[in-house]
Length: 466
Image 1 (cartoon, one colour):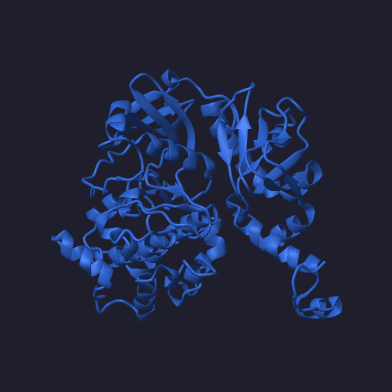
Image 2 (cartoon, rainbow, N blue to C red):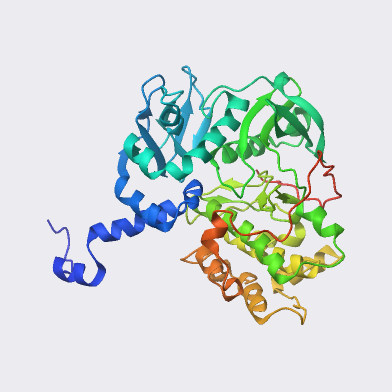
């Protein structure tokens, strides 16, 4: 029924199919792209992911609906396509973990032929992709060894991925990995495995008014699961301290590695590290998380030579198309919209990628000045000088990342991170192999003992308006 005069365009089904393909084919392409963004599925070949597209079944659930019930026999594996689910155990009122898009659950019951260890309930309206036991065994065979090893790591800490946490006193302390105004990060172990324990003083948190800040960091990290991000495994608290138990990345900070070198990185060396950050930011962008604190101090080198992004104290979950106005981050890496406080989103992270690449290849940020006022003016004017040894491709990449208008910035446009990854500076770079972490790193740290990773770092700007 027409409520007012209207015009519409009509396209016959045959014409639609001839020009665009059938709806089934289009849906297959969309699902293939969605599965490509699931971190653990990056290990699969395109042909294997294509087979999964047909095997997965899409299901939708309303907020409050229980998808998995604790104690029941597990027969399906799930990937969250949209929305947020919570993991609950033994009638707990608060979720142990929140899982968002690209996260998965249900694999433990299938791997171990066991009953569900926890209940999974929709915290919002949710769409999931589900796979039955036969499809899981047949199509995810190459990943089951990885899932088993991840499950073993969680077993050592939490009983299982969705289970209850070990006691704080069960963690054996070995030394200090890092320090800051918040407290310190300790190297701890449990069950023969090493972890990083971030210890935050409750008094400091209260005096600084950072209660919501710390809670948001915890909530954001619990939703993240990416091979290019330091993953949070468990949280604790006592009368004086809040604790966050995370992966231990034993190769030290990228900042320390750069400081020990006699000269800046080559472009190929910098390209590898930039790719690690781009993979992490692509995942964060798709998870609607803005990071806001990129710098070499927050990039840790794993024992395999790949980087992982750490310290999500300034990270924030944002609605698509939204803006936030908090001034936070490290001065040298602030985007113009952060300096002017006119509102920012994930585009500010892509600006920071441009600053990082520039610093990796030159040894200094592009806008650095001892006078902070002058530095902020240079940032707002986008006034910098690339050295003559930069390749033309690198000059162009930096120029397209360091753009005054956020909407015009590479990475912040319609195709997102794909625009950055397809830039000529990355010509010949094997992104599929890199996602599977099969590209040889330019540097692999020699780790024999717990490293002393306590460099003098640039102080981040306080987060005043949280």
